[in-house]
Image (cartoon, rainbow, N blue to C red):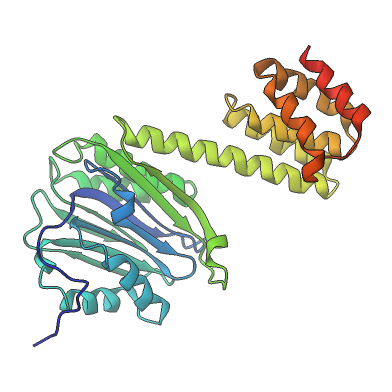
Length: 316
């Protein structure tokens, strides 16, 4: 008789009936998990990942501990199938669980319990698994697999395409409410937080996949702006401008992106290039000029009253 650890309590569970995908990109080593469900804050329950270790989705009558305990086993050398097998052996509620794991070598562990609410099932492919339960139709997970396999793009885009395909097939029989995506680097580190590449959640939204895609786009805009700062510090001005312009194209509604672009340009001596950008930002909201005046005290802009006066006069 197996002694069940205290973290398995077969009483009531969160009803994270849902569709999800776990995958590893063989080209980059990145690993990710993405999910949509008609349940509030599905990402806080379903999605788990750690750089260089693996990615996990735990759903259906969800037992959250499959996430942290699964990652612990993967971190300590178990492959995904063996890690999942060991955890299932300890769980008297395994027949109401649906769990998928991918490890850093691309091995897949997958389980759909016999008591998961129909339509329920899973399909695996090269270094990925798609799984779903309480779906409107049993064509959901095959559509996800096909979409993931056929799409050319980075891992985050491929995960989203798989979710889109599930929803196009009818998705969750109850509808839609929340979504999440977690993508991590394939390399282990003593600072694992630096390897978290995407960590986005849509907690409650009428169109969670639309919102998840919008958030991913905004993240990419900020990443492009940051890349521009790095390139400018390296003296690669044309490349930096390309990165800044890309950020502006990705998120033209966000005033903060061009503000910090202009700050970086002016602070590095490219004042004339910064002035038209400052003027547009101040026209949108004059408080950005007030913020600029406060930056020197924080060490974030040169202490040059004449330069600041020249720039802030643009708000008139």
